[in-house]
Image (cartoon, rainbow, N blue to C red; front, side):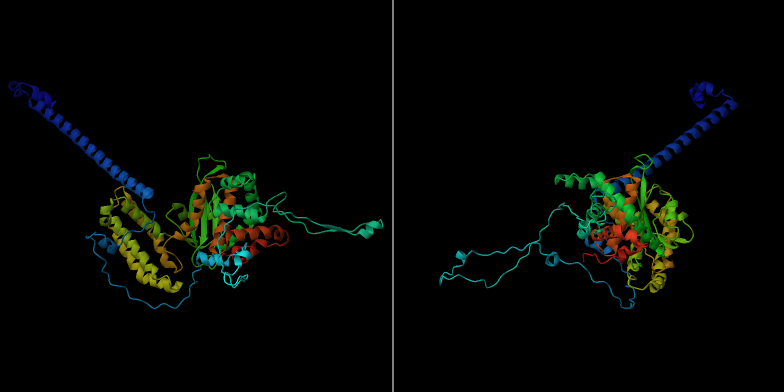
Length: 539
């Protein structure tokens, strides 16, 4: 309306009444207000686009780091930066902490040996004599035949490919020929027959143990094992191997797994983690995610137990049901389902996860500017916490608990004072790290409750890694029975490894003994636990 007033001839503008001018000005104010709202909306949109663009750049840098960078989460310390010419970083000038005398302790000596030492301990499969014919031993001086005056020995390592053969069992029957000759009732006795793993099973204990170990230890899926045997002329299908593995697992390994489960729940410090697993035929669509859970003992355990548990769900009902008889401390990551466990289970947060959030925020920044970021400072806070706690590793649990209160608590308080002062309103990696640290504070500070507790849940992550590596090869399980069998087999293999046993030899020992003792001994699984088995280590 005001524009109409400006379009009027100059001579007519003075004829506009006061009321009309007021209406013109009111309309102008409305137009200006509308324009300001539009500008504010556009500015907000631009700010949102900039924020999204920054977040996308962070994701791109992080993904690029995962694809092409190191998987290690180590970063340079201040001294390394100075050596590399990054001069705006001040070296750490904090005075060295006072040393304390620690009670003497013993550690198990390293069992690593060289290849030459291992070769000398191997049995000799074949001895080849290198001699000279008699005409080559004629002495050029006197013409007589020379005699052997000594030998030199050299050993070579020979690796033989897997060979398939048949073990033939012949059971003899005995009868009295005298009774038969006199037309009397002949008394017949038979020698004990070989007991198969299950009725009509062609495989020996060595065969099934080898298939299990190849899959769980070496990450060789059944279809690759099938190809290897087909190349050697043996039509051993993956379906047949799968039947052997599943049935033996259900008959002999699962009872041992159940006893290990009972032993696990008697401990007071455990670790837990979970990962995905695709199962094609379990009542859900083939694309659905199922889960493999892991529960294991902590560093205070005399005998380590590592158990996998397959389930279709990732809800809190799974750990609640698995740990139904457990009360104590449970090391976990920040997954919210663990927070719904009973009050008898005290959750212990993972400082390694908190550090990883800051590390990812550092990686989301161009390399030249990383050491100047707040995320780098947050990571340095947590690094100092880990370094300080590492100095307490050789103490007994009670002393460590007291020392943590004195040395570690001030560092953690300083860290959270710094965290509280940070602005996490923006949507970026650094804000996510700050939010994670704030939300997990209650659980992260539970390490002060007991000296046996650990700063991180890395123990569980290392234990679940063999399954993750195997999953990259076999990709999926066809049925839920196969997934449960995999959980049981991986559990016994990893528990055997954790207790210093050769997993193949242990599985072979179990499968050789179980068919007989399971029929005659009531508590036979207890006798075949990994830490009660005879020494099958390769050390």
